Length: 278
Image 1 (cartoon, rainbow, N blue to C red):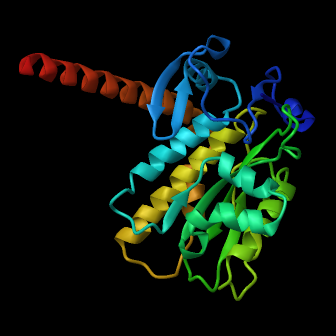
Image 2 (image 1 turned 180 degrees about the vertical axis):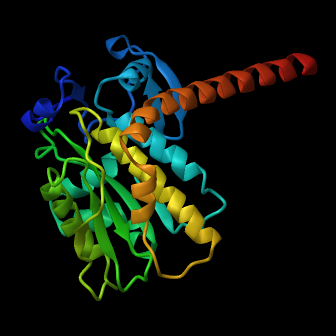
């Protein structure tokens, strides 16, 4: 299952059209599928050797890579957070947007405890039909922001192609609003400041760059024990631009290589300890 680029993104890029797997597709594959080799298991995400080729670019990021990096960001807050921050893999928002009725949405969302969170990051894919394998063309980031109190939440949408994904973001926000019973303001949806991508293949990289900037803001905010006040918009303006997005592909490759090496070292250490016991 792959997602093809839209005409608008094709026109924006001098590169040939690339393919991106839809958010509704499975995040892990078997070791032998299409010759892909598992290179790293990280939490619930399994990265394949083909994912490394995607990162070398110029190619669209798939849902595995986005899920991996959001899990990595989330791990930095384990034990240091009260559960106020939640970063969801692309498959969950996509599922919530495509469930048939509110009861199904409530059942799936119940373990997520969205109403008790201060900040929830939700990648958005515009695949309009979950039954169509080759659907969708663009990644964006929707943020459920309740940092100013559960009675005043809002949705903030970051789109690196202007308003290309606004319909998908509105659909997801509409599905989630009934799960926020304390929202006295109706949980409005606003467009957040987002630098525009200059090509047709970096939308997913912008999503993870935005997520990193928001997490940095959240860490600084918690460290200063701020209540209310400024949002993350200035941090996005400072930290996310064409150069930082371009650098992220290499940064992810280095991160993955380091994690692979860490796992190999761990295996060697365990094997050495086993031989000592013998």
